[in-house]
Length: 123
Image (cartoon, rainbow, N blue to C red; front, side, top):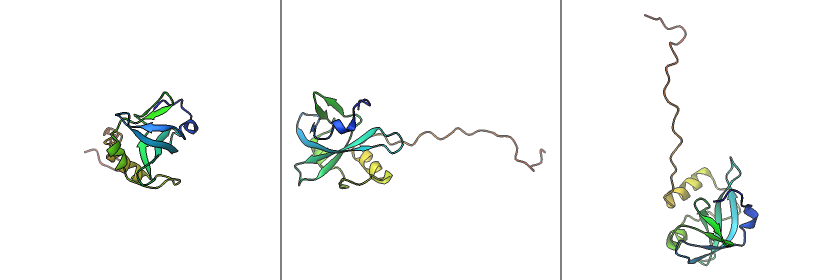
């Protein structure tokens, strides 16, 4: 999502799926713990008045509406963690998997030969 958007300006906006079908209204915005960048939006849906978490990347704010590039049915079936609480890393991982988003761990540092260990014989 555009990083220059103030997350407070998302709350109360209408949210629509990839086909233009209304999902609901942005209820809360969750920030990344490390960067402070808006990462998830909780959308108040009409599905039993629950909130569905949607990723803000690759969603877009267009013409005052949040456009979420997923089908309404996928959003409806997203894990329900309730709102008003911190999302744990495990919950975020569940959401990433649900939406089929890349959750690959960063590449491990390449192996390096640091020479021989102290006390090792050379020979």
